[in-house]
Length: 173
Image (tube, rainbow, N blue to C red; front, side, top):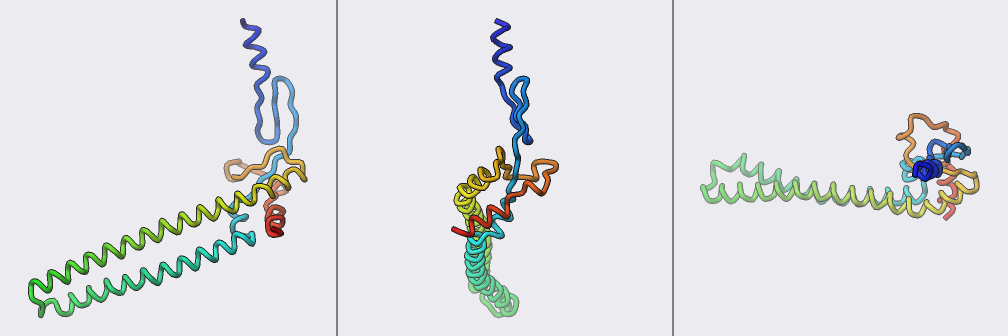
């Protein structure tokens, strides 16, 4: 029974930091990494998508600013003319102000959520399209492992950064 356990343990492999360890043998592998933020920010596809998100952001900001102007106008009206208003009119204006403030806050929150969602979708789309390019570059340069988060590792030599090459290939498409 002990022999079976020992044989099974020898078949377990460990892969990490460019080394593949199986039992008593070590085989060297080549590790590279890609900087995903640079891929999104510097690729042609990423720049176009970021420009679209910026356009959407400006449209949302204009709409939100209109709502803010409505809130400010109601607030000014109440501050300036509250003494001349009947109690019912004053109550109605206060109600309108609270409703406008809630709408304004809701618009801000919705805009933030929408922009975060768009940004996540942008990154996912670019990574999906870049995946084939990444595999092609990795095979061409004979990498066995490509890390997508170099910050998770204490140090990686800049010479194994394939981001520029992946961006260049991705921009050809």
